[in-house]
Length: 133
Image (cartoon, rainbow, N blue to C red; front, side):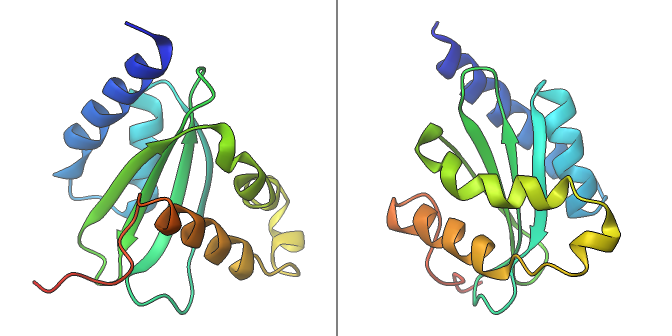
């Protein structure tokens, strides 16, 4: 089994094992990263989106990135794993996450989060709008 296939499988298993836990999105993203031996790159709010309120990314050794998106209702989590082609879009969000809170407060990353989410949608990885329940 290739490294990228193994990362995908382990990511999927971690998402499924954490999904039912009654903890917040931030804690779930951290737990998924820990269980799948990935590195949590960021967990940011997505303001003004009709379907998603938060998005997180986890990097794996195979240069693949697991993405988690919390739906607008705060209940469901969509997920996918993507290749390194998205690294240019994740880099500003990762950089912002590594900053001290005093600097984060001065820098708005809403546009970067929206661009990343838009690219995921364009590639068919995330839904465009909130599905009816």
